[in-house]
Image (cartoon, rainbow, N blue to C red; front, side, top):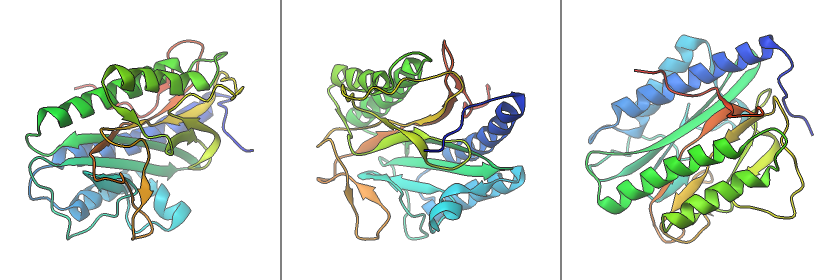
Length: 254
């Protein structure tokens, strides 16, 4: 199965530029999150940033998705369709997921954030999910088993009293949006896949306060928690090394 392993500086530069495009789009969208804004307007902002970089929306290109980006609110976990009718309110959680292609290279990033002030439980969910993503990235090291990524997420979730969504996973990325390998956020002890230097991965754990799975919504795109529990996700595209990975979608330092 096809996957990208960085062979030279040209590949790394191409992936960095794609990563910068999606990171900038995600950052500008997150900065615009406020009570009263619609998810359609947030999507317009993301599309404008991608266009400035010369990048093209990956979900549009790959799946014909009806939006430049995926924006999911509260119990919606992923693939939420931007809509002029979806108005953010104080206390909501919103997830923004941006992926794009630029000059043949692909990158993917995402983050959840609060709209205005949220209750302590939702603050806890956001902080724990961000931490789980960080620990998962740190576990992705050349020569180590792929399953260590999922183990890191599970351990973090357990420490924080949360559930890992088992039927959503990260993925290889680079010359296409979804490549080998699948990167589960739970540990599969039977998986013998080993990570190697230069492998490009999108690592994206989802944590929730409810059951550890998501279901399909009626719109044919959106995935949501089955009982309406809030959910959070953070995602980065990384290059595996023998040490800490190269994070291609890190926000610019302030």
